[in-house]
Amino acid sequence: MKLNSCVVILLALGCSFAAAQTFGFESADHALYCNYEQLSHASGFGADVWTGIDNLSMCTGRGGSTYTATLVGVSGGLTKAQNPLDFRVKGVVLADYIYDAFSGVYTGAQYLVVSALACSSKKYGWVGLTTISGLSFSANYGYLSCQIPGVRGAVATRGPSIGYTKVLGRE
Image (cartoon, rainbow, N blue to C red; front, side, top):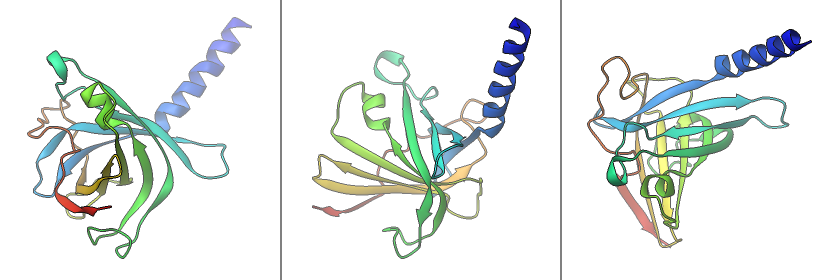
């Protein structure tokens, strides 16, 4: 009976690992950010639910420590008309805990990432929208990369992707 339980557990783990997808974030000028997303499609829900982490292991935090941010979201995207940065992204819409995880304190910042599910160096593949305590609104965007910082010689030349490219307004 123990052997059968182990096989079932290994098969379940193998399936969840097979469904996992990992992408790096590149800026609009192709610089690689230090964080990257690791997503798993959580099947069995009425909607397409995704979970994962925004991996900060290649970013240095306070005292050289590293943190990981949780992700949760649903399949979806933004049309060109809906996106304040005027391009289409289809894949997954994720709530991201990156500001608090990276700083180690509650920041009041909310980060929403809309990410494609395939890397491309020719078409923008992600947009991150930020609001801080409901007072400001900014965005960052770029290419979704198959390069992962620290893997196969890929080197991050930027900090985390939460830096803003464009301040979109104030509420």
